[in-house]
Image 1 (tube, helix red, strand yellow):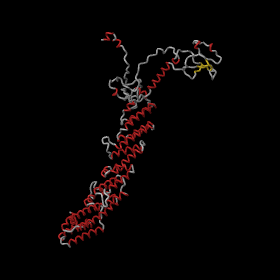
Image 2 (cartoon, helix red, strand yellow):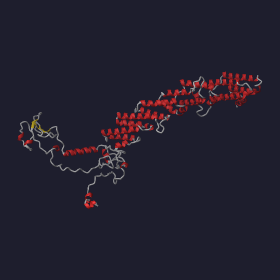
Image 3 (cartoon, helix red, strand yellow):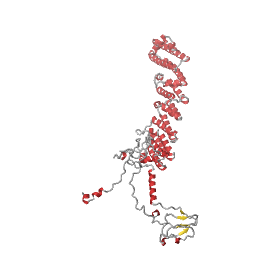
Image 4 (tube, helix red, strand yellow):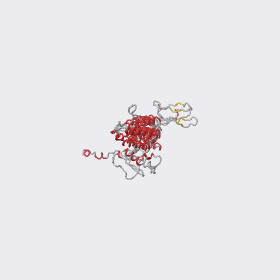
Length: 590
């Protein structure tokens, strides 16, 4: 109402609006969508927001199309049509926005001084020596006439600056001493307005021929670890095609190095396994040097941190699987010379510490991975052998201390699993320690424990038998120790019979001994020699004679005779005895 009352309404409506660059596209009918600029698609070259598409459907702004070395699509290499112009497509389309044509200067056609300083004053035609300057026509006042001086080199006259004014970079002319032709001196005149306009247009055209990285740099700063290889290849392609010159390429490499170092400092261990290809690609486009060295140091720092904190959820625990993955990643990067050998040595030291402290169950669960690590790092074999030697020794350093039969069986199973993977452990000091423990164990272990070692079934019960089958020395020692155990046990049982009440217990002990002997003989780790047969038969004969001479034991003489017959059949070979004898032997065992 106020504008209408004042009569200013028409003037306000007639005011010029600010210029807004129109959206353009290679496809007709595509204009401003009115959406947010952050949600707009990105150009495949400069990553600027654009909606301009190629005929093949890929996003490419017009400014980047003019930078392509050949008129083909960067994504699918299909031919492209000539770009309609260099206008930006979409919001921040990677090119300079079109502006309205500048107004023509009102003074462009008038006479201005050279370089824009004062009016144009024609220079005097200078001659050779003897020329009288007063005879030449002058366009200026006498008080502002130019003094002249001879040219030192050729004897020609040269125009001096006007008196009373500072020297300015004007054109100075001389006449050649030979031909009298007009020659310009090295001090060229300042460009005129037309020339300055041409230089500005050339500078603008050169700027338009340069890649706009105002959107590419922030996009590199937001890239994820999965996108890093794509951006590294993209920068390499920009440099290879000449789209990014040396200056722009250095800026892009610096941005890539900064973002890659940030991503590597937070990458989990599985992601670092694929960092080798990424670092090699970056070294290829950067040419190595300090930038690549910084990325290598970042990877080494991350590996050192993950060595103690492999998981964010449980930072205090380090499992063997974590160490295995860490060693695989470190060895791969060290083989490519992307990290130093000290980082790999730190991982090997942690694996060695784990082997020295691991239990037999842990060693059994990771036999395959342990063998791979030992083959990759031979010094780990000594640590593994030392750990197995400690497992074969009793916890207490007593004169006749021995490991339990169950532990020895587990140890034998672990050793055989490692042997099956290709490691040679049954030799030297470790084999000697096993033989010593086996000799003492077969002498002290209860018969139930010995019988458990000889059972035939699925693992882990077959560790001892597998161990005897793999080592000839262990098998021979087992045979000798079992022969001695059978003979000693037979003597102890017969001596324990002092009354008729002791006969059932003695009969049960001899039955257990016979079962152990039968199982060992079936497993191939026991063979009765002549000395054992003689010792067993003589012991049982003396026991029978003693029982027959005692009135108290005479009532149980039938039981004693059955035990004697059973032991004679056992050591003499039940397979060669008649059927009735085998029945007596079986009944005695029951």
